[in-house]
Structure formats: structure tokens, C-alpha cells
Amino acid sequence: MTPAVPYPFCALVYNGESFFAERDIRYIAINDGVDSDKGDNDFTPFRNLFNDFYARDTSKKIRAVMRAKGNAGEHLCSNPPYGYVKDPNDKKKWIVDEEAAEVVKRVFDLCVAGKGPMQIAKVLTADRVLTAKAHYARRDGKAMPDNPFRWDYKSVAAILERSEYTGCTVNFKTYSKSHKLKKRLQNAPENQRIFPDTQPAIIDRNVFERVQELRANKRRPAKQAERQGLFSGLLYCADCGSKLHFSTGKGMTPDQDCYRCSKYKSNTGDCTMHYIREETLKLFVLRRIFDVTALFFEDITSFRETVHQQRFEEAEKEARKRKREIAQAEKRIAELDRIFKRIYEDDISGAISHERFLKLSAEYEAEQEELTQKVKMGREMVSTYEQDKADFDSFAAVIRKYVGITELTPTIVNEFVKKIIIHAPDKSTGHRRQKIQIIWNFVGELKQDEDAQTVERHRKSRTA
Image: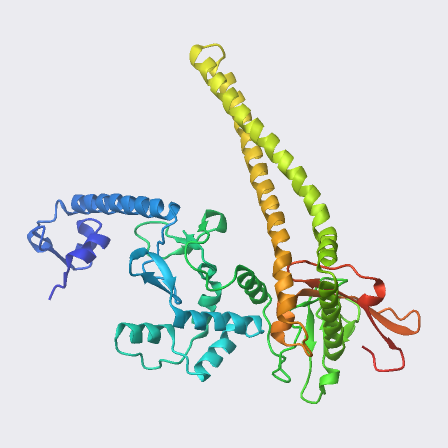
């Protein structure tokens, strides 16, 4: 029996009479009164062509509507992300779902504490926290899923990547190449539109950015002991710039755990042999936190001025310079617009040849494009400087939060420290002196005398 193919399928694959005839397929379109066995398919290719035009035109109109909504700052997704619900009084707005928001905050806190998506998923599953799907099912009175407490690491990772939790709206994150292709592609950041403060924030912007930095530096437990180093992902070699890897073993005591340059391996790597023990680093970082805390509480005004001088003084000069350059560039852009208008009028009136007009307009347009890019980069630099000035208050909040600590935890380390640079030891004096640079979150490196940045041990004693 000859198979009969329904119309929707044929509208997609039909390519002339020969296609189905060669494959012994019967083509039937009930609405159009077409049956290939009866020879009624003469106009089918034209119908498919018009159907394609109609679908293409409809797609363009829908895209235009979505583009207009997106550029206006409206949410383009049908449903809010986990942690938000639609405002019953205004469906275009989101409000916080308090129960889900607490889970979102916990996910970010666990990430700051040094746990990855897989570990966070295990913690939530062990604590019998409802998954997002189960939460929605209970809220809407629907049937619960089979495993309401089993979190997947992909769901956790998706939560950690949603910048909407900082209170902003991000539109045009994905796109499709054609109305015929259902696959969505990731859009470049410069093609996305971000609108701040469109809904209440669940996660502070600084916490979100810190989580992205931590996730960019993936940390894995040491295979020998299934334990992750307290400073994993934060230590960098001063000589080659590579990370220092955590080294431990089942037969090693905590005093023997250390970090070694990843480019040094049994004298065969590209870097020199240098390392630092974790216990030594713990004491050093804890002491430096005490030092910074003491400076802060003894004279907060002086501390602010010190940070400003070390971090912002040069940046402030550069920002003033960039602002002057931006003003000059914008003035020149406006002048070029007037010049282009004049030469266009000269071209129309015949005062200059059309070839001359094309050459001049190309030169002016190139200059204007270059100035536009310069203005854009200058504004980004000035914006970064303004944000840096506000970061001091964020660092002050971290200091106040952890005043009087007696030991380090992954959360404390990740909130205080952005990165740590380890130098090779100097043994020229008979002592093992090793310089350590701490780059703090929000304020960068705080300059100190050389002794405050080094750890030292006698050569005959156990090395640091």
C-alpha cells in the first residue's frame, strides 16, 4: 500500500513531483484538495512558496514586536526565573517569591563558601529542599514530581548564572538565525540589553560578580585525599603567572599540605621550584586580615585616604583626562555631522564632483566611527572608576561583618581575598624568606613594608 503523507510534513519537504514519485509516496493535502495519485499537485510548489513567504513575514513582525518590547526594558521571557513570581497587580512586573528566594540566597552563599554546582546540589538534596519544579507544583496545586528533593547540578549552575537576581533585566541573550531554525544561539554581550533595577534584588551585585570570578577559577578536590584546599583557585605564581595547585595525600598530615606552582614538576617544568604550606598561608592571611581590620577601626578616615591614594589617585587623574577627551571627541563628531551635511548639499548642487563627495564622505565617516569607539571606551573607563570609588564601602562592610574572627573559613577567604601572588623563596641570608602579595576584593592591593609581606623560617627548620 502506498503511504499517505499528511500535509504539514509535505509542506516542509515537498520539492516537485519527482521527489515523492521517486520514493513511491502519496501526497495528500485535504484543505487544498490535492492528491498526487489523481494528478492534482500542479500548484502545490506555488502554495508552499506562498506559505513560506507568509511564515517569513509573520516571523519578521513577531521579531519586530519582541525587539520593541526588549528595547523598552520589558521582560521577554514568559515566566520569571526561580525566586520571582509575576506581580498579580501588573503581569509585566516581577516580585520576590520569598520561599524560593531563600534557596537562591543559600545557593550563592554555598558557592562563596567554595562549593561547586555538584556539591551544592548534593547539599540541597541531603537537606530535602524542594526542587524548582516541585516548588511550582506545590504552589500551583499540581501533582508533585517523582523526586521532589533531587537537585541537578545543571539547575544549580543556571541559578548561579542568572544576573536577573541582582535586580536587572537582560534581554536578547539568545537569538535564532532563521524562522526555520528552532535552535537558539548565545548572543554576544555587546548585543544584549541590560536594564538595572527593574525588580527587587535577591543577590547583591558584588556577591554575584564574586561568584562569577570563583566559578571562572574551577576548584577540584585533590584526588589523593578528596579534600579541597582552602586557597585553591586563588594562588598565582609571581614568576610565570600560573596557578599553584593544592598538594596533599592520605598519608600526609595537615602540616604537610602545600601549594606548588603548576608549571614546576620534578625539575622538568618551565618554572622554578617554589611552594608554600597551607598552614603557613593560613596564619599569614589571618594576620593580614587582623592588620587591615585594625587599620580600619583605628582611623577609618585615614584608612579611606590610604586606599584612595593607592588605588584611586592615578585612576582619578586618568578619569579626568578621559572626560576631557570624550568632550573633545563629541564636539568633533557633531562638527563632522555639519561638514557631511554641507558636502552633501555641495554634491547635490554640483559644487563638487560626486567622486570627490564619495571620497570625503568615506574619510569623514571613518573618522566619526573611530571617535565614536573612543567615546564608548572612555565612558566605560570612567564608569569603572566611579564603580571603584563605591567599592570601598563594600570592603568596609566585609571588615565589619567578620570583626574578631579566630580562624579562616572558605567564605571568609573568598569574601576578603581576590587573589594571592606567591613569590619564590629567597635563601641568600641563611633564612627562607618568601614574599606574599594579597589582592583584596574591591580595593586591590594595599601597599605595606617588605617585612609585612614576607614569611620567614630558618633554613634548618621545617620550611614554610
